[in-house]
Amino acid sequence: MPESGTAVEDDLALVRRACSGDREAFYTLVSRYERGLFRSALAITRNQADAEEVVQETFLRAYEHLNQFRAEAKFQTWLTQIALNTARMKLRKAHAGLWESLDEPRATEDGFLPRDVAEWRENPEQRLGRVEIETILHHALQGLPPGYREVVALRDIQMLSTQETADVLGMSVANVKTRLLRARLQLRERLAGPLGKRA
Image (cartoon, rainbow, N blue to C red; front, side, top):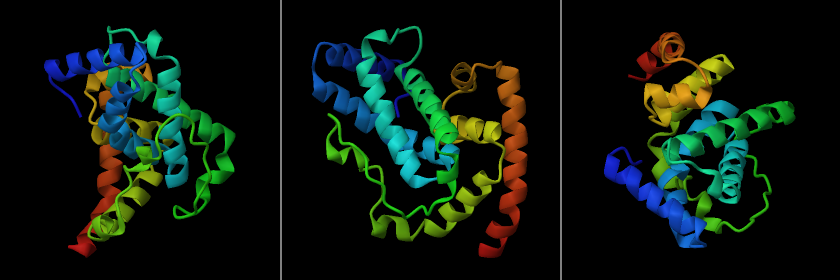
């Protein structure tokens, strides 16, 4: 995902084109950020079907409110905040659905986005070599308190800076650092056994 100043300027240019009706420019932004958003949403919702819906709803809402984006923040930060709010709402509205199978399909409305917006999912061959570690990490994240999962999702999965994570969560940088440290320590304890046995 973009990090440099040039990349940020490129995001702004794409946003301006999308606001002028250029949907291809918006699809470029979708392809740029969909994978990172999906991983973050999965860490928060703990359910693949819910995470997929969060990402699609995020892009739909972003498109509908694109003219409200202000360049004071990075587009990635703004988009991630929408995804976080969407994931939180889904957790509140569908708490019982958190424990359904990760492999259970769920119907969604296509809307204006192309069907290939779901291409963040790896094919079976790509997943085969990493499925065991991903399962271990997924279960470790499940065991964290929601606030800790959010910080890990934004900082370590989405790769936002500490300041950007603080902006998205609406807390101080110091609190983000404290919460992230505690979350990482808990993850280390949870992963030590399973990963040690695997090694």
